[in-house]
Length: 167
Image (cartoon, rainbow, N blue to C red; front, side, top):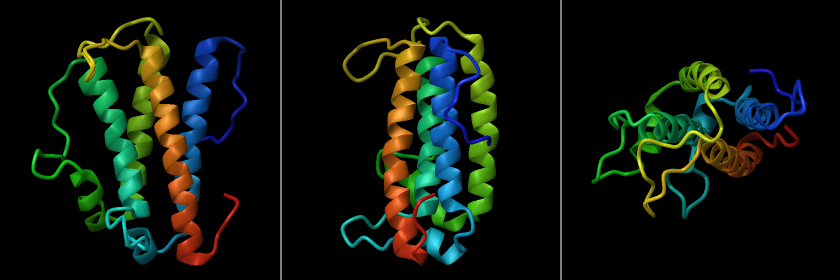
């Protein structure tokens, strides 16, 4: 993933897609060079699922949910269940970090093509919890917010793992 927050044009779509790409690439960059053990470690006592691997898996599946399930209206085939709604974070510790990142990057590339092809005012096929059919613009902004927030978590986990900061 290219990591830049400089859009190629000054239109709204370019800004939205560029910033989503930037926060995605930042999440990946925060994981570069971390050991498998550190990627799977949950150092925060109150957050036993908060691992670097878990966060990358979560970001991948959040995008899947909002784009494929909510926006496109496809069947939800995510890893979560009613009994284990955070399963995407739990199972991530059993998958090599490189595999999680590769899956996230491949999916991101597919979604970027889709996001560039659809009208930003297109509405989701599925209504959200409040009954609203959000627009593609809302979905992109939500994914930027979600990814940026978890980048902060990745910052903390990486510093606790090996002292790396400033990525």
